[in-house]
Length: 276
Image (tube, rainbow, N blue to C red; front, side):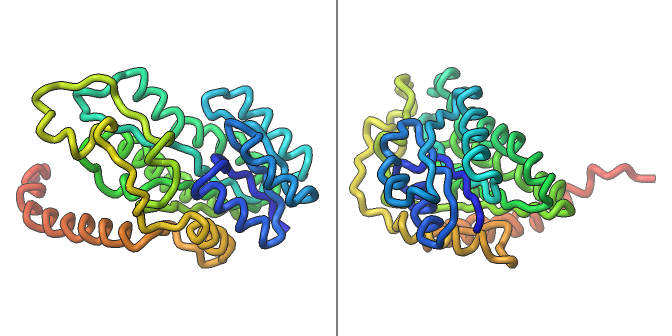
């Protein structure tokens, strides 16, 4: 039986992951900023679920949550960094304090959780770290530059981490979801209060004030959670797992363009070599 530590379980993919793991008979530390939102899960599985308060902007609270999980279950086999939120703003319209909070929630806090839990995994020579990023980490979308940057940073750090811990028996997996029917597009989405007239022509495409959640996203968080758990437990789990047909299409479009551009400009790139 594995023990999971999952962030952001009050709704969406985080809850889907937690429910899928519990259905499989796993032990789960179910975390949320408001623990009462996950209390029902703990009551449904009293022997295997522990509801914990976790605010990623409270380092001492994060440390307490990790310690409480270890005190209850004795180990953490799988860390699933899922919690995060979006941010809509043109780069010039963004507000520094909001960007700092965005990066802390989507990048620095997940990396700090990894640093806290890695010693326990190293000691046992076993573990799996699942970092949920976004299709936004594959390509920067209009008005989502800082969100893509934060998720992209998590991806690149995870690439390095994978090389560092593989020989220790610790595995890593990135999950890149497309659009899912979650609260991400409601309370999970933040936006800048600033606006610059020169960007008004694009406003309908990105400003939060103009966003209307039609709740027609193709992704099912319950199915997504089941796939994440099922895949993470496989020995042949991929390093990157795209989640949703829309994510696959977006990645194909972006990744097909890159080698074309690379080849077109390879001659110019090579001109920078030192000639001897």
